[in-house]
Length: 321
Image (cartoon, rainbow, N blue to C red):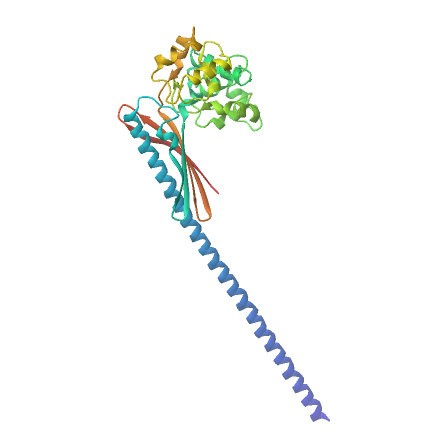
């Protein structure tokens, strides 16, 4: 009986050892399977990162090429015409084209066809300040907002008018900040200026640009029709602006003298002459590319120098989707 009992215990131990070994083998298999899965997934992610990087680099090359193409077109235009209008080649810069596995488009905008907000760096002068107040009147905004922008740009801490605001006013806000006290680099800055909100900004933004110098005249051949209303000593009627726009024809006014002779500007010649032009130096190029899974948009501000024929990129901004 003792011998039989010992045999039974030995058989039980052997069975338990066999079961433990099986569990170990299964655990090892689970670990190996999990490790293999992670390795495959990591390799897949590495491949995806490589593909995304390749697609991004290809997009950069595409938009950089369209920017270079824009400089060529704008430089050539300097030698072909002394005016800039909406029928020129830069307006048809690059329609959608297929490039290998991607697509590319590029458009040009005359930023001098808008009111340069940094013209207000001259303060409450007799030229740009009243012109901007007429613009505010045109879009049905309080004309005193001009004072807040003047204070945002000028370097002094003297408050302009009843609606002006300097750093001492902004420091009392939550969160506190200071006035820029320099030229506006992006028109989005207006959302920080006292008196502005998203609704007011939306009304004004179609008619303004932020260019890096003062006294930039408005190109009357490319500006939006409503903006022509601010070129008189008083805000012109919409019908007068339509008449001025019709006078542009397909190729715009040949020179500023021809524009000033228009009957709609009778009595406002001196005012219009001070703020009007028929050619432009500043252009924004918007390039959009799509390659693989990546889409890229590049916005470039270009400045043209008629005196030497150069076209220089002043700044760039890009967004990736």
